[in-house]
Image (cartoon, rainbow, N blue to C red; front, top):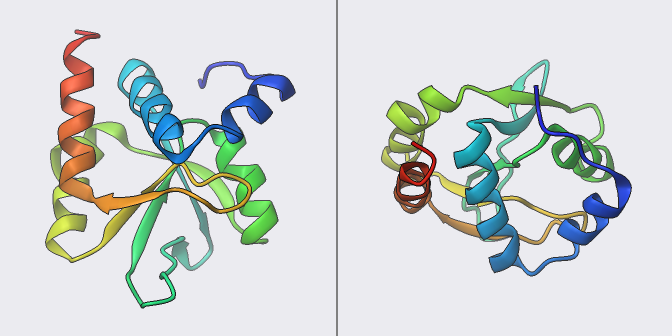
Length: 131
């Protein structure tokens, strides 16, 4: 079950810079070992940048994922992505497939887009603090 969040927290975190949201994401995901994406009946949301770079967006809490999906991708629902799979295979697979990850897009769909291996490395380092 995800941690509880109120509207003030949602707005405060949504308004952080991309770098600050990234650090928030790493901390929360490593601590709670939960990560969220959005999907519809056709599968996980994997949009492309204007220059056709495919990426997979992730959020640290279903509330962020759902509200942002409702704003930008109606018909998609927040769904938990298996954390263990993410760190043992998923991020490596995304990197091998040439896909980037979008970490914690906000309501304005602003976020850091980076190599999945960088996200994996940062999650593993942060996870050591919680073990």
